[in-house]
Length: 265
Image 1 (tube, one colour):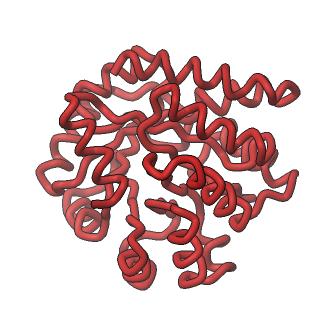
Image 2: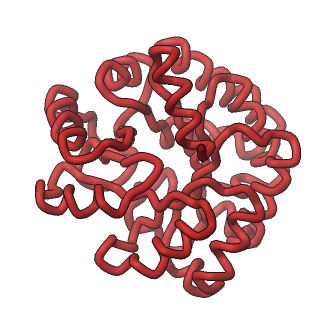
């Protein structure tokens, strides 16, 4: 059983919702990322979503765009991200790690070389924002061969027919975007989100994680009542931006936020 399946099975057995924090790899520097990953696990993170810095992150709001800019300023590449995961794996062989990013860096590295390298590093899943399932057959096949789950986004505007198609291609879990637009945006209509999650479940046996617009313990607890996982990102990255001149404080401060949200689930 994969680490992602094992994680969701354990959460289901315990009767709780999985917590998935997002951070951008290399923000504000590589050493902070590695320390923070371990600190987040101790604070209650079940799965870590690690953003791959990219110069044109079209699905991300200003907060996460700036985090990519900070990471790129120090030269953080896809190879560096894989090295960070490998270093993390030397001490933690249990917590799933999902890479979230864009197709260009993967294409530049080459599908096969990337997937082989990701497997060696210990990556569990890859969410490629701008690779739709219609164009992802080759990538999905390689992922399957190398025990990596291709994870797809479903938005409020996604039709039922398309949800069925995505569900056939997805592995690991489905990431439901709770609001239209980019990360860090408006507050979701949680009753509508709940209905859409139920509809997705009717089309797919995979767990459903909900992200975008979850800003605190209260909103996380609300989503946790109906979702299999809660994804938090902008609230963490905002705080990291505030602390960029004092990076040594980041692991403790972010851990405190995660611990608070974890206790609400």
